[in-house]
Length: 128
Image (cartoon, rainbow, N blue to C red):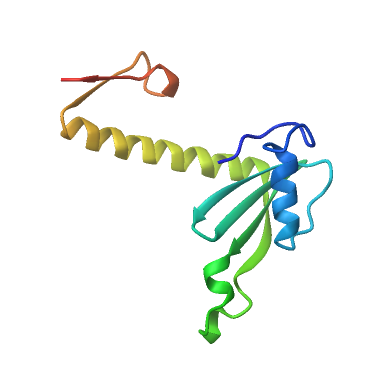
């Protein structure tokens, strides 16, 4: 994922994400925080912060040229989600993924130590 920065600060921060979103045909604000993630070779998801909401713009280049009628014109779009709800969902997925990964690593011979269960940055990995 691209780093979130103040809009217009660098070509690698929000301004680059904004430029790419507009190139894909999305209407993005000039003063919003925005970043994107690549999900596949030709798929991007842009996350745009607009006050109390997150506008999520998605583009799937692989579906753009599909011959399947059920996917025609569904290769891109935008949805808005309340910021707090979005944050809750992101944290829920993060915790679930973290627990699954640590479970697999423990089974494969890695030792996980931590000062607290919820302080992710204090984890250290030590090979047994």
